[in-house]
Amino acid sequence: QVQLVESGGGLVQTGGSLRLSCVASGRTGDIYDMGWFRQAPGKGREFVAGITRNAGFTTYQDSVKGRFTISRDNIKNTVYLQMNGLKPEDTAIYYCAARLTALGGYGYWGQGTQVTVSS
Image 1: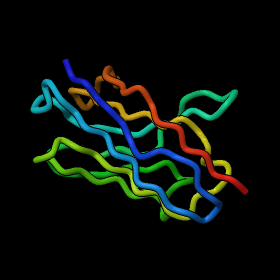
Image 2: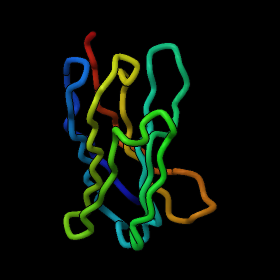
Image 3: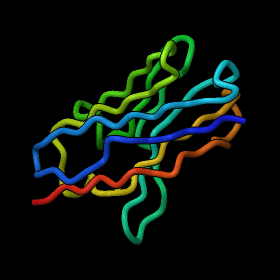
Image 4: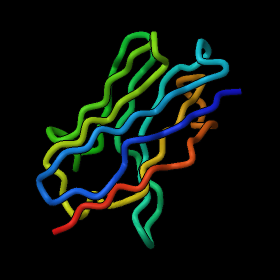
């Protein structure tokens, strides 16, 4: 089992920045990669960014490229999402997720943290 706890959400104005953190515990050594997802009101959950635990390979949704940066600290078992240039359309609940294999689904999820960007 893997447990995930997010923090760092809040209210920010357009153009502002926030850094989300996700601390993993449990079988952290078995994690293949971790990702950030988000769900806006009335919309489905969407992938935002991901990073592999060992090599640190990253992937991003096109709409956040150049504005968001995902990183990891394996000593602290923590993944970060630095969000710059925030826009109102970034408003959502942000979830951290983990999976144990490259082809598997994200089977472990945090409780989510709210990010609200005011115009």
